[in-house]
Length: 261
Figure 1 (cartoon, rainbow, N blue to C red):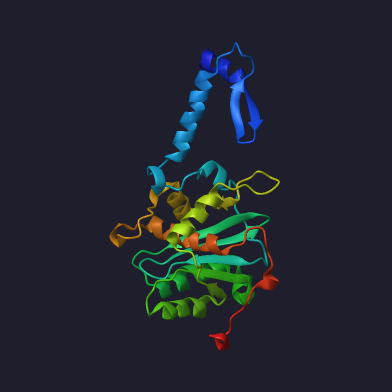
Figure 2 (figure 1 turned 180 degrees about the horizontal axis):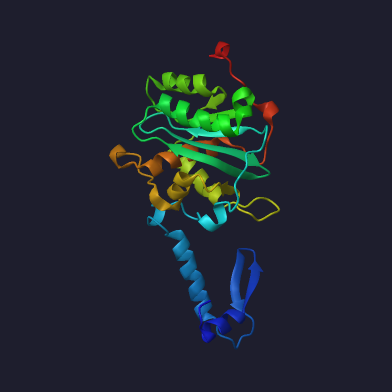
């Protein structure tokens, strides 16, 4: 509160009341006034809902203070590493792990004007070598998701990624709209038992933080309007569609060999 005796007194006169719909602000005593606090609460809701781009074009509910970790997120040694990877237009990559009901974003990259092979070889593979080498050495521990680009060269592009990184790659069945809803759903979730947000992002993943702060677009028709933040958010949506939060059942992962193709 800023220095206002009236606002402070109204804040002290409020209580939180739980009902089947959730929590609401109420008066401690019927004679007290709390109108200014109720107005402040609705203003906060509006500020959170319309931060960055207005309405449905922003990642509603994303809050840097809640979703960006204050401490460095250290990769969990030997745990599966998930990757969301776009193949065309602008290669973008988001790398994460799942831990006790949360998704921990370790890194996010995009390479404007760079081909897929160079992006994966010089950026993604180098990051994995330095931070999660076990995922490169054990293909059961590197799980990737890529977008259906509806082109004949899709498998050629995917082959580039598999040759450089290995791992098991799958194509989520959901289209962009469904994956977008999955992202927004994740942003609003809390880790069971802790009430902490299920999404935690390392501070170095600046492109994803900027994308979720409202600088991305849901427009899929006009490609010339797509920004770097769109491509990073798209890679993130692919990852979210693949990760089963709260599970670490590596034994259930199907590994595809060249003979299965």
